Length: 96
Image 1 (cartoon, rainbow, N blue to C red):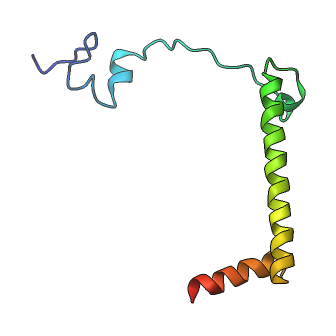
Image 2 (cartoon, rainbow, N blue to C red):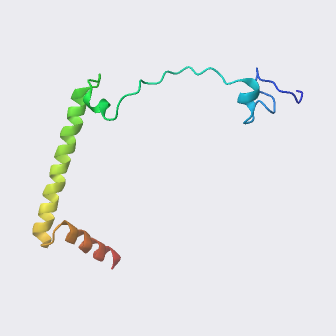
């Protein structure tokens, strides 16, 4: 193999470097961009999403949040400290 530029097989020294787009041309891109939309438009327009799956995720998220809130109330009732006090007590226990 010689020391020249071989753009077809991409085997030349220059063709594999950063200079190859200028010397050999940029390859054709085979992808399509999504159309531009205004800020927040994707949240308000109708999309072909699986809304049933989104409802399941939101239901799970709400139930886990309720469990966390109940755990915070239970911890406050047991320790007598609010959420911040519980974290401080946990850090004191962990660092001691």
